[in-house]
Image (cartoon, rainbow, N blue to C red; front, side, top):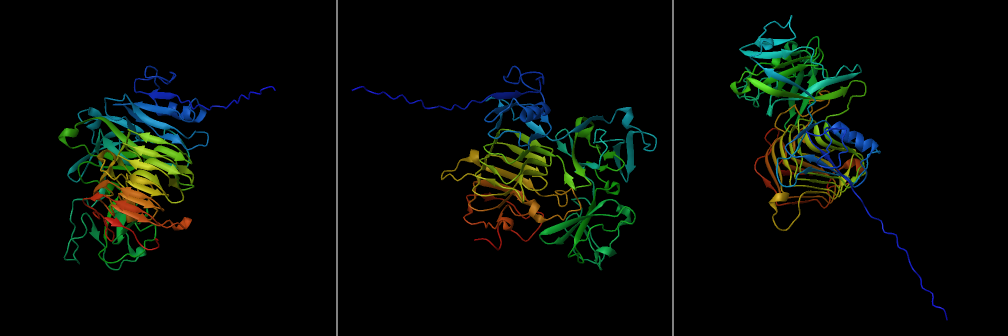
Length: 491
């Protein structure tokens, strides 16, 4: 009898990955595949993500101690999933910085070009407003010559690493008294008189600017003021006597050191630099946001912009000077790992807002500081914010400080939209089966931790576990909440 020997061929699928490097000393003509041949700019990285050679499971590393400007786009379906973004070398150096600022200039107030007190006849110089000196630049066009329906507005302005303050009246540290009231208003607010119907309010000294009012204990609203008479352009509900309010985004608000104002219609930038340590700015960085007047949308302003991606790792990077440091869009985002990153000097840290989903992901070991709106704001299920270890692992603890403290600034991109205390949280998580553990939150504008249902998907916040978090100070800006807060419709 013949023996039959069967030989089975089992295919083995190997996963290969390439590593690409970016350095400030690199060259965009390089291959980018070694530390000796790195790329230089994020624009080259974006092209490689969209057109290749970067493919699924590849690794992208930014050199430590370097700063990279721009937005990393993983928005298109042509961009693969399964990517890892990290830093090199492994042992030494500060985290590489992803900086959202796109415009900059050098300033030295001893330069004769800045010592001209004649705004009508000079493109740069200074003006005196009250007792303060404010420098100006005319024809400060953030659009790079593009002619479309887009308005380019300034959100943040930094001198080196120091944040300047958007002009407002009264200032944040002023206590304002009203003749009809015995007690001071909220810090830095005026009191509304009576009657308080929206159509009766007119502020001709601030026409064209913005009006911010705390219309509920937990909420505030923003309206533009009419260019002609200073009346409210948008309706605001629940206005009542003694509600605190202030003005911003108007030249008349310039009255204090370190303030700035950008007139995006006339393209004039005003800023104060009247401090000894700020005589010279090696770089003044502007973070603008592009606002489309036709479809009322914003085209950019993110560190990472992701759409329907999975298995994405972002670690050991620093983000600053942008709208949302990480913006997640779409309903098929899962298995993200965001770890050991720093998020600061921006509007929001990590954002996956209403209508989008992030699931089965972990956000741990990060630092969130000086964010105008929220640290983490996520709709989704089965996520871990911090960690769920039985033993305390401080390296996985998320740290939040100074979040949501500037009322009316978090929605500066679009003053026509109603603002809300919901934007001023340290962690906001909407969904089910989530874990929020081992986080440290200090000085938060509204709730330090808030978990709520997601009604539009008929999902409650069932099985949400909150454990071993430390909260030092919350409700610093608005009221009617708590250090840890939820409300009706949860299971």
